[in-house]
Length: 475
Image (tube, rainbow, N blue to C red; front, top):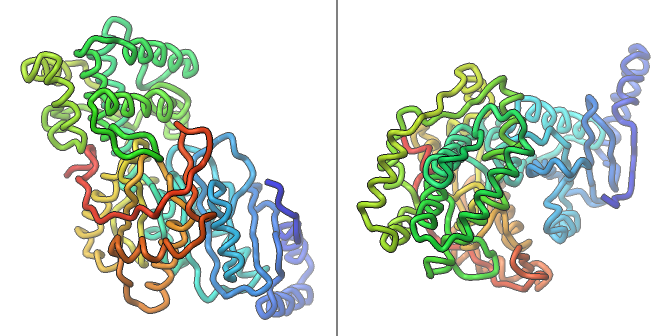
């Protein structure tokens, strides 16, 4: 990470103190009181129960600590305490007196109870070795956004506010079910003669390679019916036809289908056919997903991308062709869950809406990995729990997953901080948010894209919207 190592070995010191008797304990308590008055500055790192963490404390700490929950990325093994994609956010936060903390909880497809325990252990360490914060906020992105939402329900007393960003806030169960629907559709309609494994995958790498080869061939096909079926598969997972974070939402049918298929090919294949799904099944002791009882005609009607499917089939045989393909899905060989695995996922990862602290969510409207409908389903769950006054939601009109500028992230954090400090939500209209974000310099307005060689300067893109519920979380 290139970060300067500061005070190290705190976990070992704590163990040594515990073994030295009451006199040493009293001395340690006195030291902790001194640290609470004058917290150490700089970067501190180490391990807690074998899990690496990093903490950054500015010399002029303002009393607020931000606990970061990292996104899913098994290739990253070093702990992070802020969004690595927007390093200017960390610079700004430290310059304004915020302490930052993060721990490298397991990179699995949903937040486990162990991840919650790791977060709470780091907070306990912080209180002992840095000082007791006046305000404790938790924030995170993608997998970390889902964990942040879970903390707001399952560990609310430890926090004053939460900022889940681009998380699967409908819960991991609906997310895995929606991806199963996409994989099932491809097996049933696009390559029925050579189906790949979509659960209980015996050889994930080979299985994914076979699926991607077949998806590539279908993607390059000039057959309108094949293209329509690809659009249907993506739409049943609420994947939008918009993938370029530096481009406006496309209107041409071919461009929309290409964007939707790009998510299937580049961004989620491991959770359709590879290690993302097989590792999850290994963790849960079986397959947690199912499509028993799913009415695919009704599911398409509920999809936020149903218009893409209708346009695609309009040039591929019309409503008769769509009816035939939906009938094939409804009559196909369904997938049943392993009951124990489904129950374990529900217990460990479900989002109930029973938030106990102020929560602000931030989401791209064109997200194809955690579709924006997750936020509507989350808001509906919070409403059913009677907790709507604790929730506000902000949206950015941009494609792809977690593509926010530094100014947008800081603006969201300032909104949450204002709610925590005053007890009332400030205005969250898009106009007010964009005006606030626009006050930052150009280094805070940078946006990258998978489709462009370098970042570009953009304007803040907050938008007022109310998305449809996530397709597999519809009650």
